[in-house]
Image (tube, rainbow, N blue to C red; front, side, top):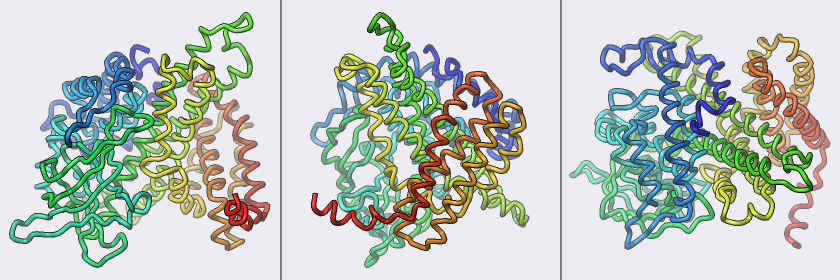
Length: 573
């Protein structure tokens, strides 16, 4: 590929056929920026063309400049010497190219030097950078830190830090995890103490597993309320790298070798409060992590795309038994499933990003309206709930598929794939972190199950169903309606059982059913735009409809066997 944007037919199909008018109008407001900034958009059509130009540039840089450096980045890794972290040479080159191309402020407002792009466009950019080098994405994608500062910081903090991010002068990190506070962030103990005479906070304690912890600007979750033990005692702070903030070590990781993962020691480090006290975990971290989860979804899709192309190229070139192995059914089934999985994950990712844009847009509109109507309040509430559901589902699906695709594409390579002579080994190792960090798959299921059980996605399914009127869509829609009914019956079953443990045990199956139903509607929505999409839609339905039935059968069996016996079986292992 010469360009990861223009040469990817599936990305082109989704970009060209997704109605972004509402997203753009909300993002641009009344297009007042056009009066002040010569690169601002004048209307929705102008914005779409601007998005296309920026993504074309990103796609070209990713393919021609970043991807060729990725193997040497993986081999060199990050360097650590007496508290100083140095990126691999290839990462430094790539970051410099991205800075000079003015791509470091994707979503930030123009007043701070940003491009003011929606999450939909940013997700495509993140996918392409990840396809080129997944470890670079872990640094480039931390623009979410600046987004959080923009959303919750006061004007003084925003004016101080955001221009640094948009110019690429700084990189960032979000310092959340501690040795005894991983998934359970309520257990965070890093201490924040306010010094009234200096009007500044001081941070003391340790953070661990911090992606790009050597970054210049850090968002830190810390305990600001003495004597508290839960999330209500935590606040969010911003601080800068200095001598009081010590990188104690970097981790020796399985993959993403170009991205340093650090252990940090805060020694009376000066910091400033972001937003209000006590809302650090309850509001700000949730927002920060949801943004990060969309980025990791895009990272998963990008890695899967890279792995698939490696597998396809190898299968076409490798001959066994007198034919290229791409012609062997057991091999081309893996390749077809990989392609369909990538298209499914991409559909879900891009639609999630679109919904996140609508959520943010209506929240801002609600905030700026003196007397908001009931309709505006309801619309904002609706997209808030839908984004809260789709975000964890997208991360779950994208990252699990990324691992499966990378696994299968290594299998396509056979024994040579196990050697370090091919890129597939890097993709296989890089994929493995995606369904772990920013919340494991199991935590994504926990985050999504409430929205599934309360049927948050039903209005959106109805909306999509209303446009599925073509002859091609009708037989699939009939089958899909039946599976949607199975999902609702499964939800009713667990509700009627009124057994929290039983619902928790089957929560993964319920979320999986919901993900497959929603993604099936998306396939049907976009199928009319190309013959290839019709073909992948057919394969997706053939593959996933039986899985929905299997999940339904297990959920509604009422069987408590594994729940009742797990203690004895695992305890006696």
